[in-house]
Image 1: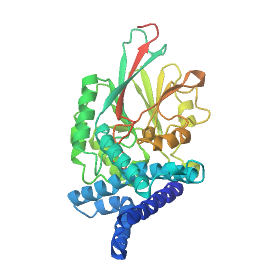
Image 2: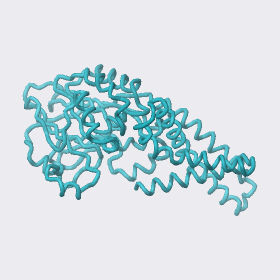
Image 3: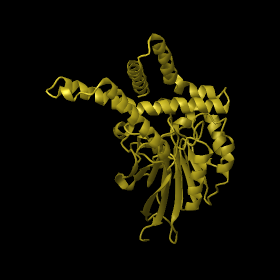
Image 4: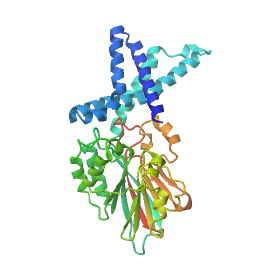
Length: 375
């Protein structure tokens, strides 16, 4: 998948270079300069995390915004341009050849569509909303009231996502007055050296039953040691393939994100599968499973009541979500599973790559677990 995406991104840059050079047509010198600029923009996402380790915070942010906004532009421009190319090809060899678009139109229409979509998406990414999920269960003890859990997923604190977004998340969370706060991965995005101060603000959020977190894929990119240090400073208990029971009311199990899959698990005796972890838990109280990716491990349904996941971002941007809805079986929202289990997949509170969301608003989720029979 990584190489497919990399190849498509390179192809999108190449296509855009040819369209720009044809449209501008300022001579060979201008083409060379344009080619170097597009090459730099093409490679910049790969250099952002590396540069952030050495460069100043301000220059790293400028590089990140430049590279990622270019990426956001291509996400819309490239498929839009290809659709118009296909349209032109079809009508030119038909009786409707007079309806073919001019080369300028084939460039300008996708260009303005992409610019407008990214401007809108930049502001949509700031429109944090609260999704609400109610679960009725006979597993809460007699006399228990409603148990409120806030899920934060894929916040991606880092070079781009900073205090403004975090303050919105904290403000919404505190107003919901949860008993428990959980992070289902990618709370931080890669390198944490410029955002250590944000852990102090998170640490002040203290729900009565605690805060729990699992590790996501982006948190591996900046080094697991740095991520764990940040989460500890922020007051989270990290559940790495283990579970905790809270006041004999709910047990929360966390499954580690495993970047090397089964091979890594077999070489590391301390890493267990979700099925192994869940099989050893009690089945008479409500079991909440935290897992970053939205797949449901074979053989685990019936061993948990609700799985909370993230990772998908619901594609984050149209038209990427047209592809991700086929890649991820559980793409977004709530799905009832066999044997009494269920899964909820968050769209995430932040952004990965481009600071843009298009037709996929950011969210935090309030899960209310209530005794069966209570309205």
